[in-house]
Length: 347
Image (spheres, rainbow, N blue to C red):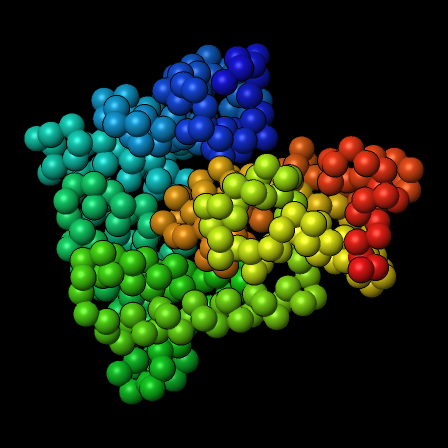
């Protein structure tokens, strides 16, 4: 990555999406650690997050010693090991300890301390089970996730009416499509782990399937009123459908249709009185990175919603709409707006 005097939050967000696709990911990790150590972060409070990203890159690139060093530096940078942001760093430390050899007991102690997070942090089921899998303990992950699901569903059923054993369907707070609740992610991760272990489908697997179906339906209903407004430039769109063909139903079967859907939605939103409209430039690497962190498929509605939330929070990704009729079109085709996307909402 190009060396910058100061790394901003936007820089860190961009690196989180793109670092593994660079020519030298380990160099990116080293630069992140150097920036954190030498005060080259715009916000010093980002040091733990920068070092955690460095640890993640090193771990994925099979450099356990570097991953362990960065993870321990990240934990030292957070105010405490109990900081909500520190959970992923601790899981990365455990993964590195497993890979280092002869340190399995330390790794398990680290992960055991993270078990309570399974009940409160949406990302915890994915990163805890991934760490256990790195140590060859997928069966332990299934046990922990199953016990967490039982605890959570019993607590919610009791709060609602009575013991979960008397309920026909457990009480689950599905949450909105762009921010599903903890129970949703816990059930989905348990479902994935059990599938990878070739375990028979059980009642909670059925519940995970039903909840995912409900979330997809609700997201579709909301899409009738509100688009995620992700815009895939031509090269990114072609790659998106090549890697994830199921997303043609979401973003269009071709680039013309994709731009037409966005233009139509923007016109509708303007007609409904919304101002300050725009689209958000998306990348396949960014979507894949979110899927990787959540342990999901890029086509999953929850993964896409999480990515859309990240992109829409990044000012550099926003493309204002509409341009003037004779100005360049917002899609980057090089044509004037009136000759390109403006007519698409009328077709």
